[in-house]
Length: 221
Image (tube, rainbow, N blue to C red; front, side):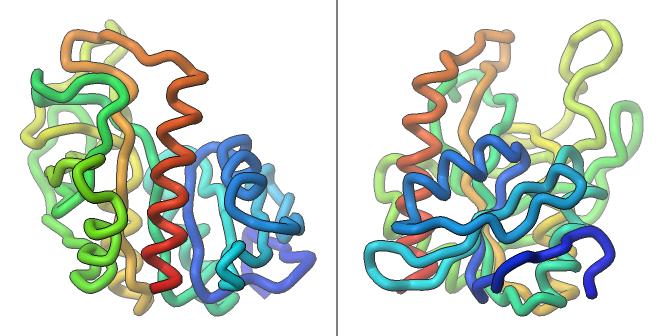
């Protein structure tokens, strides 16, 4: 039995991973015909069911930060997940990235947090990346994400790191997925510009749903 998840129904071999439990519910309602809650332990809501294309799919929240995401992914591997797409949010580092933009992650740089050096570079599964690229089309631009322990210092300023955007989970998931034998790719939605401009929550939900439909199609290909 996994250490953190306590599944109450079967988990699919393909999964979409999100940090926020509420976003897992939103995508389950959008992508699954009859979603069943497959996990509620530790507040890590998960849902499983079939898509309109009759493909089995699980939507699973991973919590906040890389350590939580890596632990959840290990549990999912034990439950039989073999492919996954992360749909997350990020803060732009590139000033040309505007809130609402979608970033298809081509590589992730692991950082220990503000003031530390750049860590290992990890890559998505190439086949799943190409499937996701094909489904997203021109809606997403390829880019590099820097994954940190925290996105903001106590004063509210973003740390200075290299990459197009910063988040808290992608590098951990790609690295752990590789070790677990899970093919994994990621698409991120920019929710904050490089100068701190935010994004409307309703518009964010629309973009996340678009990304979710692309991810489900890529996994069913």
